[in-house]
Amino acid sequence: MGFNTRLLHEGAAIDKGTGATVTPVYQVSAFAHGSAEQLEAVFSNKAPGFAYTRIGNPTVSQFEQRMNALEGGIGAVACSSGMAAVTLSLLNILSAGDELIASSALFGGTIDLFGDLEALGIKVRFAEHITPDELAPLITDKTKAVFTELIGNPRLDVVDLKTVSVFLHDRKTPIPFIVDSTTATPYLVRSFEQGADIVVHSTSKYINGGGNSISGVIIDSGNFNWDTLRYPAFEKYRRFGKFAYLAKLRNGIWRNIGACLSPQNAFMNIVGMETLGLRMERLCENALALAKFFESRDDIEVNYPALEGSAYHELSERLLGGRGGAILTIRAGSRERAFKLINSLKYALIATNIGDVRTLVIHPASTIYLHSTEEQMHSAGVYEDSIRISIGIEDIGDLIEDFSQALDRSEE
Image (cartoon, rainbow, N blue to C red; front, side):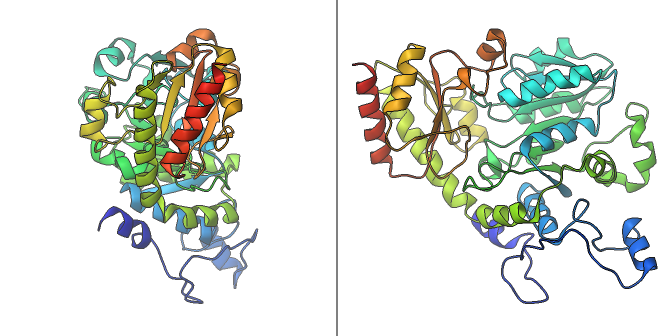
């Protein structure tokens, strides 16, 4: 099936009770059973069914199945937010004394999270770029995972997943590769086909598309062999074979922390994701056109991976089909001009989100990187004059006209 056909039909299910073409919202806390024995069997995972929405719900389950089908994994676990998905994907593996290698070009909230991991006894080593050459000197016998965003937000660096995954997997002691694919989405690349082991999404963004629900998801490829000598906590889950990571996650920290997705938000995501292909096609076209407009001006500096002058242009062609995603950044020359430019826009909304159908702008240094050091900001591609633009589906002529007048007014 093609991408848009797969969105509508793979993993989807007609509601058996009513014939509803979209899974209804099972907005309920608990599910009744005909006998104590039946509920016992469901609770102990010896029979299919639902008991309590924190640990399973039909609407949420349908969303998980459809996300798993979209990425081509063996199973998915939905979470209450993208940050919950990132956190639990790592804590399912790591414990005190372990080390994690991560890209320094991460979303500010993820960088803040890694500071919290240090308090739990988990050491985080940052690599300026996720490449074999930069990873090699950081790896120790305590390194238990490597984490990166596929397209860095907002540095917009693109990671060569295939090269990195081969390097990590061909070692004497293989290391799992966890990829946050929020900014790329499966429309641009299916990360498992490039060697990723675990994929996470903040599905609040492009999967949902309408800016109406907070959510996240963790998807497992089933390809990594969880050696119980290096990952002793997996010992009790060995009997699940390739499903060991998911079994441990669902029956352990995800279930116990309670960062579950609400049925209503799962429903909104199901509705939104069915237009992901159409939206991403338009968003990427708009982003490239706006980036070329900025490139034509001598009063602004633009960063977008699909531009011919970008250091990631060749990789974008090879890995992302010539597209660069739906985010671009510009540098206005000063903080004052950046603020004036933002405040002069008519259509772009000043908001801290990406992946909406509306164009959104933000000054990262004063908002999502507020708690970061100057060194951390610069590593993430954030400066005092930076503006991040999340492109929407508006008519591109209107967007170019809006940014043109805002640029002119910011110089007055």
